[in-house]
Image 1 (spheres, rainbow, N blue to C red):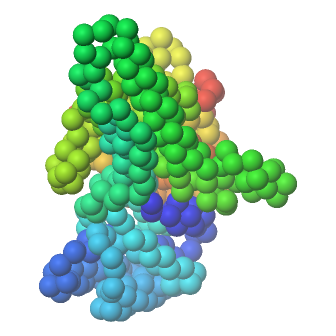
Image 2 (image 1 turned 45 degrees about the vertical axis):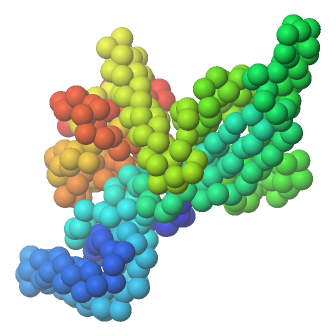
Length: 410
Ligand SMILES: [Zn+2]
């Protein structure tokens, strides 16, 4: 998973009225021969920033810091050894700030200068970065696989459970119904036992924190699950089996495991790993889209009833300013210039002074990024939507924690 810790460090960077941060996103190709092209592309992105260094409207300290940032980034790119598929670089020389974040997918390549790091591509990747456990099972045999969404790594076999089965279970009993019943009963019992073994293994993979010793430690030392690494467990489950066996298996699920289930499919291609991967990807894509669609529809419904949902940039900005956003939904193309109050955190589309506390406002090229940062800092969740999930005029959208206070006259 992309270290959420890296995003947190970027979110911690607060504008202080001093020189800005240069943010650069670049692809890191799998093929080493492509690297020369990456270098050329990043250098041309950086070249695009040269006019800022000459811009006499900026103060000397800012121009100097940007020039040093460009130099440092050119050096970093010259001896880059990034792993696929991308990297985000953040530099503010005046404040001795530098972060390099490896990305699991290719980002849209871009360089941007603003008072704070531009984090949206990283937040979007974290939103979609799931650690998935896939189980393929039949009557007496289950194989566990690890799968990372959006990465081209193969499915990795991590574990298996083998239980006793009766031979020719479907054709037993002969002429005597009594014996058939007994055998059938035995087969069902063995299958149930097998399912329970598989579920016990899944519980360990998904809820390692349920181990009593770890829980005790958490309470005693007051550490979060993230500190003890519990968030490194699996977060989504895909189940694949033959026909009715999947449903019999799912009936045995405890609720907490059922909540992690992204979907199921039948007749997995266990002998063809690539084909199995395609089947898993289909399930996960459907799950992701359904999740987004349900979230968006819920916001639209509650907004229509005057409840805890808002749509459109203006109202979402006021909701974020009020620290009222529980979940923010936005599209990659939702981007607009705007203004920020670094005193109270008020966000707006335009203006010179903050309508809340009268401080001068700071301009930003992408107010949606500032809104996203504000929501994440307030422990909210942000989902970046796929194309076509939200009606264009209604995005961004937000689900609120509490009703919005009236907007200050501005
Ligand atoms: Zn303010």
